[in-house]
Image 1 (cartoon, rainbow, N blue to C red):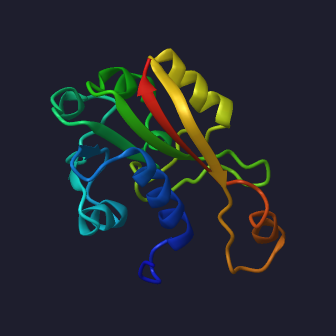
Image 2 (cartoon, helix red, strand yellow):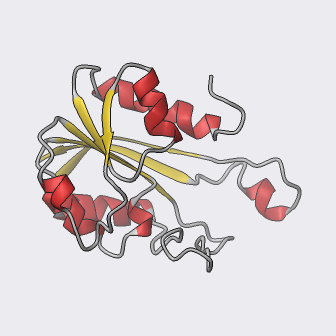
Image 3 (tube, rainbow, N blue to C red):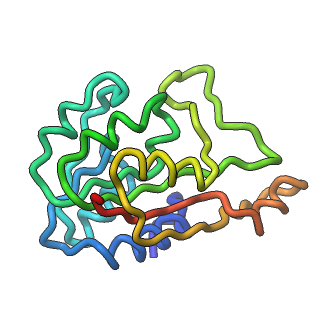
Length: 173
């Protein structure tokens, strides 16, 4: 369905989940800069705008000023120190979020060469549920899924049956 360089399983699951809850006539704010998945949504006929790469821990003005229908946050909240602030600032009533789940056999992703390309959080499902609920969101649907790799070793084997991603659809409660 997607180019070989894209994480096709993750994108297919995310797209199938999104189209259950988001119509093509709804305006989407996708948190984070333009990315392969937001480009796929645009190619599929969705109206998507992205934030500009501002630090959403410090500046939520682009979120507060959004006048559309849906906010998406696909693999963004793990990079923030405080996703709660962004969740509270969202002005619309529909939200889709995906995060990497904390894996007992692997430490959180870290990139010493790029401070913005690191995971401050890797969530357990209940932790994301808690912060969403506290920020006024009701989870309507959720799915977890694996992220197998073609590498050899114990961790790649574990990735075949250990859920890596958690995807939720929420509405303002």
